Length: 245
Image (cartoon, rainbow, N blue to C red):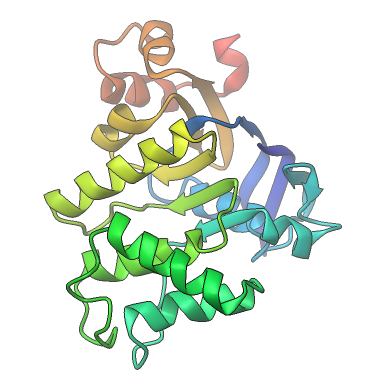
């Protein structure tokens, strides 16, 4: 489970995240939905300990991201936006390097890498250098890298950005499998189709604040809209979360 309470992040005079409180339970896919610049990525970066919050607190399976960042990192796998790979290493070597960082024994790491390479349909390029990979190949490698240590919690920042249809289908299938296995999955997106197809619950963020949260059908009903896209437009046009109470 991933929890956050009153998270705040400022960059100079700009408040990028303004008191975000959320809960992403196990065995669910929870989506952070918002326009570009809403604070989604900044919220995720605080959760996976790249940014220190200026206020508030968050926990990964009970481990504080502020007071216990190393323990919190052990409990999650992260796919950041624009995740970089080591270009001179093969996809397999990139994955195994992260396995070593997490302390996996060599035999276990190799077996787990083989499993992920098969699961993500990476056999064709697993032993090629990452330099020159397509966006889909880069994403699959970065995702395998994030999952190598079998984390209970998975955080993904705009995971389908730039992917073709087949890569998106592979990713959807994997995320649903992880959900069925009881994992907590938290992803950010501004693509309505992906949120509708994948998410059990949606947290709508605008101007650094949580505007609404609930299942997609609940948000549509609350906004009096036929589609999630229409509901989203209506919800972010409201003045704030108190308008929805």
